Amino acid sequence: MRHLTDHRRVGLIPKGTSCVRTARAAFTLVELLVVIAIIGILVSLLLPAIQAAREAARRTQCKNNLRQIGVAMHTYHDAQKKFPMGGLEWRPFGNTTKRQLAWSLFLLPYVEEANLFKSIDATKAFDHADNAVAAATVLNVYLCPSSRRTEQLSEGRGGCDYGGMYGERIVRPNNPPRGLMVYDKAYAARNVVDGLSKTIIVAEDSQFIDGQWINGKNLFDQAYAINAAPAGENDMRSEHGGGAQAVLADSSVHFLREDLDLPTLAALCTRAEGDQVGTY
Image 1 (tube, helix red, strand yellow):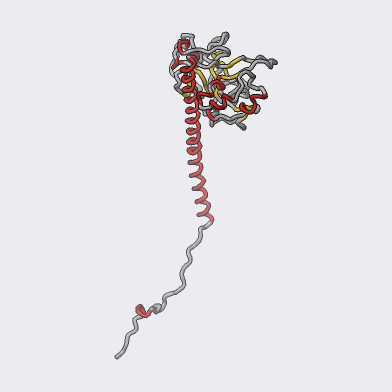
Image 2 (cartoon, rainbow, N blue to C red):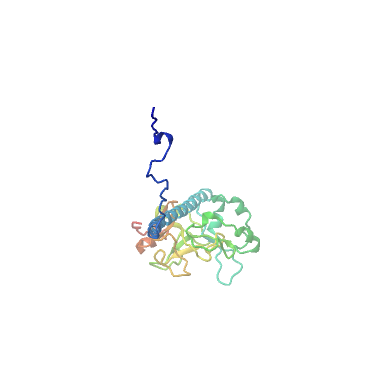
């Protein structure tokens, strides 16, 4: 009997079939450049969104700081029947005897820093050697995360990006001071006749050189539009872009736009002028 051989069964390679595999071609230079260009476009589209998301998070943290300060102001008021004074014993140029202590120092027990407060000798000045170690403590509640500070210390003392509202110089002179936070005098809620929800108590004052939580110079009277003050002028400013945040005397926090009309801004800075506060 004649036997037939099935090359498929015995694994033989059919005649004319090559056993050499064709290698896959690599990326050409043009294809590689196209891929790089696409990646570059995607990065350029995503980077602004990432930066915006980060700034939104920083702005939210800043708002939380101010909210905590506002709540602490009311807790202080509940205990002392008045808000803290803006500063104790303002120090004129050349004077070395005035203590010049800040509202943010007196607020320490109400922002969960009671032990730090106890370590400070309030009978001595903000820059006294006995207070130097405590004054160098960095407190995140007093620092805006968007601030472009190169260091968290200012002249060796913990920084503060928030200033007490001393009044305004936009529409009239601020003498006597017409804000809620002034030197050597504390006001109660009943003294804020313009309304707690219409009066700024603390606002952003980023990168002011004397912005130190122990230093009583962290007060300001508003003289310009928001973020418009010249360098060196103590005024409402921030790095958020488009405006700055402020906490009102009712502890609510608001983002105030740079284009806020000046009469409204001035009215928000005073405690008892009877001004009409517009939309903000």
